[in-house]
Image 1 (cartoon, rainbow, N blue to C red):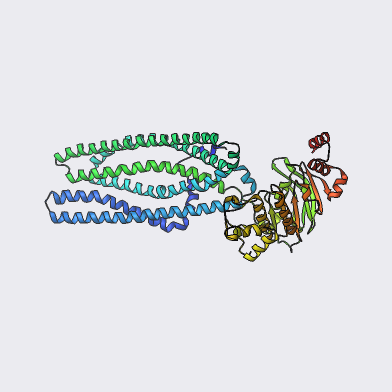
Image 2: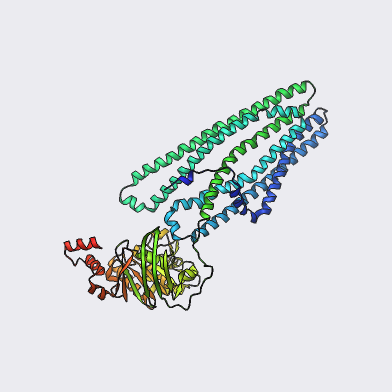
Length: 600
């Protein structure tokens, strides 16, 4: 896997990316405005506390006015209570906005992923796409809830404290601000070091996610080849790398925050020294010095926060760039500019000089032309890599032809809405995908128009009902991820029930009888016969015994159609099909078979 894009951190602020991010806030702009206003009110309450302390000391304590002091104390408590309420509402509102935006972005990403062409998933690992939808979106939430909005609060507090300090005594304010160069230098060092550490952490997280996804998906292979110990050792290395990178970040934080505390202590000492001198000289009151002490303590907290928020913003910009790169990936054209409507279903398929290449001029299919009439049953055979699976992927527009045209019932499929096209076609694949959920949900696949009676009847027609009836909850029985709690043959039968329940006019079977026992194969073969009745059927198969009764056969070799005809006609030709048949059933002597294998 290429981790290069995980390494790119970019700028802490990118106006182009920020504008796109702010679009997600538009539905909640009223809440955002309220949140910013609440931050302004919170700033006022934070500024009021030290000033009330100054008034209490200089006006009432110095003059021994208990009544006035009591009023100030009550007012101070009221300010604290108001600050608590405002902060609670503001934090709740900010988190609410962040979660809503996360929900919207994840929904958009998931919706976009379902509209991307199959070629996109050929080039992008699953682990990376999952990371976009989870980790990267979570980083954006951190920016929205702890970054952008609260940055306004920190800036408000800093500006307010500077104004209050200068207003109270500008000379003492300048003395306090004399430590700012130290703050800026420490912050710069911290920011640069932590930036590099976060980059390392993200790279290592990407490696861990990818390795986990790969190993969990291939767990059966891992266990059968006794790879547990070796894979655990490799994971331990990846995990240790992540630990060391994280510990490095912790070390920088452990240095930075005490350094800021030390600098703030220096500022406090300067206030007490200079302020004390001024108090002794009767040019400054004790209340002002106490207020400065409180303001200085509140002054350095936003500076610490802004250092962290810089890293949050930087990570968010990197995450948003990766998310928008995904969202900018061109979708498959689901609806053409001038879509055509399909006529009444007939089931005619025509390939007109179709060529297809995954990469450049390396064609997997080349100049393929044929026509399947309504109701015909046609098989496609050929050696591995001949282009059989690519052929059916072009019919369903999982890929678009590089050259030529494909017609369904006389209509160019590129002019059809993808939804309309695929509603007329159902596929039964060699590797059946079973979703987590009940048996009936896996048959219906979300189609509410399919009644329970239709689900049961389809299951009975394809011999799936007997095993479903034995399940603890029957059609309501929950199947685990990828159907791991039922057998391969049972999954295959369920896929037949799924196809029959949707009642397609065109049926495509891709290696549908492979990897099952003889008894199950008989059940599947019977199900196939029922499925193919009265509908156009295209069968991809290596097992030539299963296709001898089709209407005719297409023989693919190295991406080109080399032969077409019935089983008997192709056997009489003694060409590629005949040689494939010999290879499969060992009808030729060993030397001849070797020669045939080399040729085919």
